[in-house]
Length: 223
Ligand code: C5P
Image (cartoon, rainbow, N blue to C red):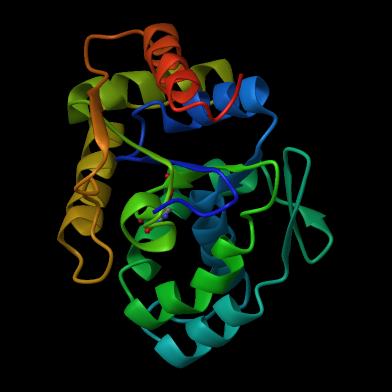
């Protein structure tokens, strides 16, 4: 069943091209964007800033429930500070995936994520968008690619941002995050039963975008 607000979910592991596809779809549809990973990253940033231990569930839940983060255009603002580039590091991603294992933390972030669904529609990017946050989404996509290929892409992306990176280290980080995301008890990373799964290992991102765009048009979500 689809709600009156069109929702397209994009799930999959890190470095698979979800962000690029999401931006492309935002441009083509004019829909809003939920980058749910950015919420988990902002929480990780806030926890480190407030020196909260990563196993202090009560404090993490309290922070998640009233997370002082705002998304302004493409910027992430935390208590007035622009943290957009700071939260893009592998270190923050590692903390985010550690905290994301805690069920009460995920529950505390649920309403905030659902609130992004507004007309004319939403593109939701994450790990559990199609399975937990928007189970009634109109289109559910799940992107995959091997860990090696994702690590190569991540290194390239970091280079364009002027950050040098070690491929072996990045591969290890990605595998460690995959392991936590795939094996956690609450909202593990997996395709929804009704998701369209796209293996992007040997597809360039433009091909992925075009394939998805035809799907969106076929479902008459846009003209
Ligand atoms: O997508 P991104 O790499 O920014 O996400 C960082 C981490 O946040 C992921 O590795 C994952 O552990 C967590 N996350 C999550 N559920 C989401 C989005 C992100 O658990 N919907």
